[in-house]
Image (cartoon, rainbow, N blue to C red):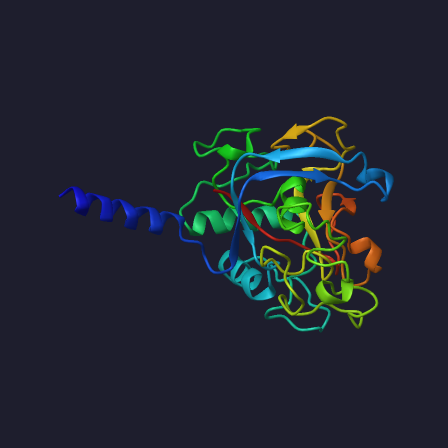
Length: 268
């Protein structure tokens, strides 16, 4: 009987923690966020600890995925600039669009939604929370999670781009994109097996844009309010320098264009 219980427990654990194929598990840890030689908003370099695990999309959300959401909700489908849909990253996505998709995906998998109507985090009981470890549903990565994952959950080696010091290996940018997006996963992945965190499309993060802390941080989620949200990673029409893992950008939560996409995340 004891052996049977152990086997059943093992099966339950395997079932609960089995990762969908399109996601990567990122183990919690610590890293140095920012860069000493970059723009002012990339400084100061500061120590960040994430004391929890999370899963993040192996790829940017594609037209294939977003079009299903549009079909099921009656939302108008975003333009593709005649570049094609399918496995290309979805574009013309605002921050507001991205969090609505996250809530829809949570509901479709019977998970508590991560956002209220004002874009604030919710815990499993539907209460507003500022503790990222209490958020169960699909959401946008925090800026710290995004950079940590892009760096391969390490600062060693401390690559300029997500998985390489050579942008041609990992990034669709101005010099090699042919002035359009490309199917996700067609460049090399970083150390964690995540694709396109440099170039292809900008990726919305959850955080309001603000100045970096000059002290150590634990599980940061950014400022409590602001006028613009963070985007990371650069896009197909950026110079390689703008696709570095430390580069920061920001726009209003209602802004969208042919360079704005997203990738999704969940606390484990």
